[in-house]
Image (cartoon, rainbow, N blue to C red; front, side, top):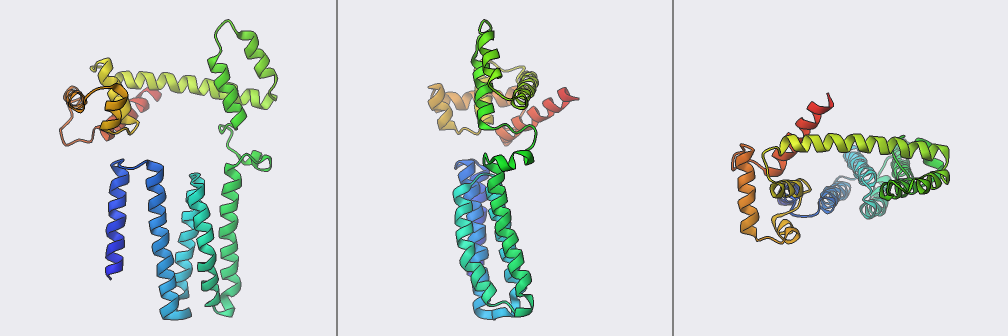
Length: 270
């Protein structure tokens, strides 16, 4: 009972820390996954120790959720977390299978193999493997295409020959992919600028910069360091921003900006 209470409190505290951006988001998500994974692993071992094969369904359900956590972590490219999960799953699965009845052993092994194969598949999908090139979404660019797009963006207007030369080194498929992405980015950039102008219409340039940094998830100290201003100055400007945007003091500035920016983007996109 105490163990479950402690775990629940730890999970709630960690979720609060992540939502409040007290830690890097990627690190916070990894820790959340790890905390849930460890709880499921301990529960499974305790269940097998005290009940043997009488509650095998609960154990296999826990293992199934552990595989989902590993696959989710890999889909978010949390490679170290996924590797830790995959290694930790091996002894848990081995003990669980050793307590499984012969009649259902085949199905248990099959489910476990599918779980490991799914982790491998997601890892290969996120990699640059040529074998999985056809499974990628059309809008997803490979690393060389991203580099080419950045190089094209850095070229000046009078350097058209260099742009032609750069594109000629790529395959027709890559050229089309880059041109499509460039057009998409221009459209997105224009929509973003217009939406931002709508949200921050009454704000000064300095206040707009602060809003942008708040949207990026930067904390007060980070904003002060980057803008070389005191905490009292930034706090005062944030207060002015709230007043100009008709926000309550209790409103979360970042969430409110995200909401208004999302609404402005949707209205422009219609």
